[in-house]
Image (cartoon, rainbow, N blue to C red; front, side, top):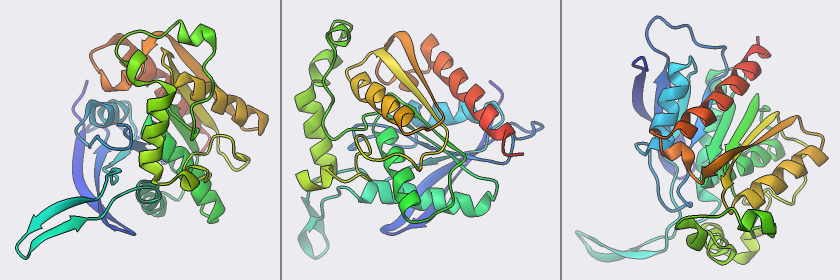
Length: 284
């Protein structure tokens, strides 16, 4: 892979500065179109950063293919906790929805101001959910439409849809035990903060009207409980008349974009690159 340029900076959001990392194509390579990509990492809403492979290696690969990319260090969901300061002990406030999705929206809007021909938004796992919610938030606020969105192995519903028997038989490894409906639904509740917030479309878009969606690419892992949500969301997009494409990569596991040394990483990236190139070509 040719070396790409990256610069760390911040974008102001409603809760303060949001760290971002901007990636540019290698020197001498002309960018593919003028619609940059904003890419949101996963991590169950409570972990992850700009350095994890799912953020950094994906962005590097997209930039090496000719795209301008911005990654986002959104605020992670946390519980309130004690902290020590010079004046004694205090309590750090909890972080829940809508804070993480608000961070994503703030970055996308800032990048939109720099890119009049549109922005592509993408996310993986929890980042896919945040991105999907950001689409509806921006549409409801009357923001400029996105050029396209793409999601990898996301969880889009407040409660994991029922898993087909054929899917349950495909599950292997430790995530067979940690990606159960009960644990995933508790993770969603931790992010949302309250059960009433879980019902909001901007928190979990699955099951809500999706008519304002731009062209969408979805990629799921074959042996992944969360495919129950991804497949259902793909059907909901299709029913809403959205131009969408859905792929399940055979014999793959959740978070394959966080494992850049596996062949499936390149397979997933190639799907994204080809789709994004097509979106870019329509912007010119």
